[in-house]
Amino acid sequence: MIENNNSFVIDIQTSGDLVFPSSIELINRAIAIAYEITDKSYNYCIGITIRLVDFDEGLSINKKFKKKNKPTNVLAFLGELEKEKALGVSPPFLGDIIVCQTVIEEEARSLDIEVSSHFIHMVVHGFLHLLGYDHLNDEQENKMKSIENKVLAELGIKKETS
Image: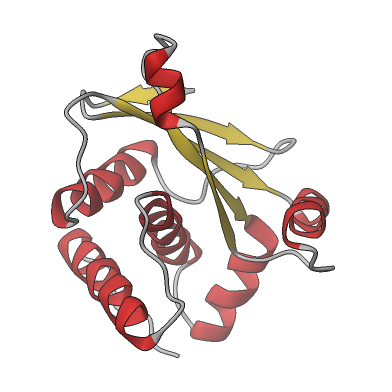
């Protein structure tokens, strides 16, 4: 399913018969808020793929691309935006956000929060990675967390602790 809000297009995908734990509207709103808060912007519409995967696909992707033999909560894979734009792809895709349902369910239980809230947090986290944000040092991590917390607050989602 593809959702378009004029600034970006979100391609929603799922592994097997999984169902997104949050509404498409909430996902769209979270991405829009994050996009507005950040210092990154494009003067054209961009595309983003969000894929919800099961344990096996999450494990396979993390093993293949990150060389880790376990699934993780979220992975972000940067696309070739400028190359796609030059080729006339409309919209060019910024990248892919992969969220592993099994992992976010386990983490939500341990954090005592709703799965849908944690899912939205992980989507925002992945989107920030696509925009170039990272958490390789304390300064980067604090900036990224600050943006995430602002988005969650705007959505009325309780800040995660841990």
